Length: 301
Image (cartoon, rainbow, N blue to C red; front, side):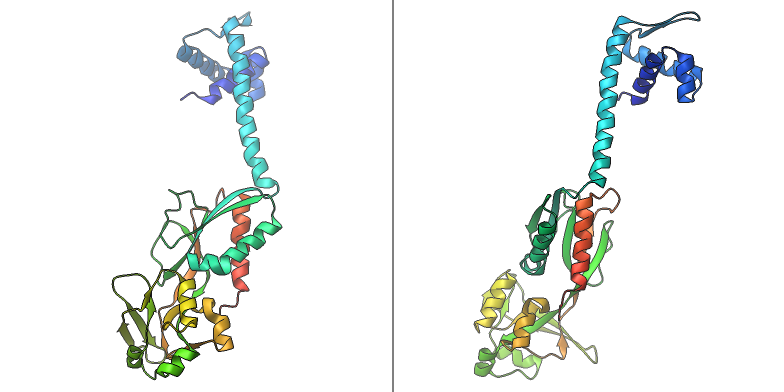
């Protein structure tokens, strides 16, 4: 790997037409400067500068090499200027985000759209997935995740966004048909909706005495989509555990009823993870701050 310092020192020696003037301008000793040039000539196996106590002259090939070095140093300067200007100019570039499907549908999708309306030069790649993504390997700037407490140790930076509370809900018409369950055992008489997985159960904790009870069930409908779950619940296909943020309007209107409210399902945390804030592009940093502020004002209840 070539040492750009050698190129720089060579350009300065040629520019000042001698080692003495160049060493004064660079504030380094003449002997150190000479060693850099000699090392460069030895590595290239060519004489770049003819010098003795009375004469200094750049060889023909040295002059050609000087022109190439100037271009190299200019390119390096341009590259650094690009970074500085990118960090200081108006927001631009592409931000890559991963997010669970349910949160893309609401509220993250709307938040991203609002952010893009405010920053017209920013592009966003929003990946809706329930799979765990390797942030560094897949080039993700911000990963929004939902995890149950406590969060696992990670080398990533993690910022909390909000609580992720689930509620067990049913439509009023379904309850009119089957009756309102008084206990967890009464849930066995109602049809269920659940995720597409081999085993199904709900873990409940009593709100007052911390008693834990697991309720196994067999879904009538299996799906990995909260939207499909919600639609099926409203259509009286069965009861379902759904994120409270996803059904808060229907709970307020009475379209959906929370079942056994004294029993609580596991609570998780919505958080955003990223590799490091150091070196974060302005558009990524601005979107991160935007999401943090938006979640503060979000009515999750």
